Length: 378
Image (cartoon, rainbow, N blue to C red; front, side, top):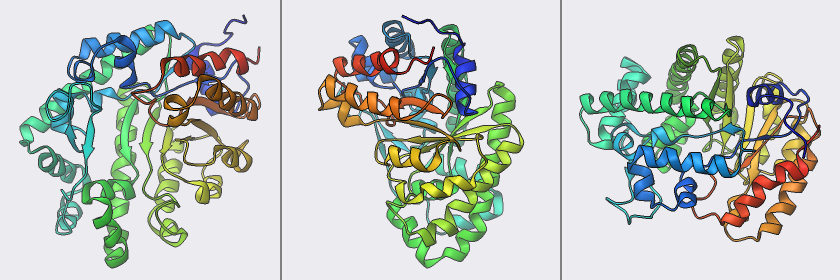
């Protein structure tokens, strides 16, 4: 068996910059599956930090070819997530059965009247208002949870580096402006806003975008890691027309990537849902300065045809191949996926979004085994 000739960080950086590497980067989003692998309930995983971290360690010990940690528990970990997480959370052991997956409940926590608050006081202040409502918590509870969440993220970083892994991203900087509003308003209410009060959104979307860019700059300076997670889902061609994409989504995503590139910050654009209709848009973004992460809904092979040589693509073994397919079917897909990208064409081999909590262990093994079978270039 060939040995690694690069460190995990060197391999990740080279992949993003579309340079040759010794082997493919392996960067699945493990999350809740780790608890199942370690034999604990999801209640234990979501409420006991040390058990969760130990479970993650066990996955890595079993599959040390996992060299880049794309992980995000600190924002969902129940004791803090239910005070400052991305939305209202239902957790195993409290609102749900002990071994159920956590849920994010979407509802109209933000009203149209709140747009005036955001315009007057800025996005970061309004974000605190939203979190107070979403979690029915006081400002003091929200800010205290945010401080604790920052400590947990630092712990994740230190554990990751001790394992010799790279950090796929150093921080999770939320989502593009369109998605921010959609999640806070709820998807149906915000889509109505898009049609009915688009002129107001034209004023507000830049405010949110500038706040996101500033947040990315601040956190990368603080952590010393120049990669950030930025989610983008609800502006995909699966949901909205090209006309609306060109008005409400594309310009802000382009500005975000360009501004971050000027600061040597690499956004990992986590594009869940089907972006196939929008793939040519990504050619407008700076070459080699961002990562396009796909979740299995977008045709990753079409993405390769359009974007090869332009950007790193992260993905995309679909959830169904982990849960209902056979291990040999997953292996066949992994062989095709890894084999499609040539060395230097920027594949980050990953699960399509989170690796499912109910993944079959033999399929997970097949996923990791595929790195040595098909992803070695040395």
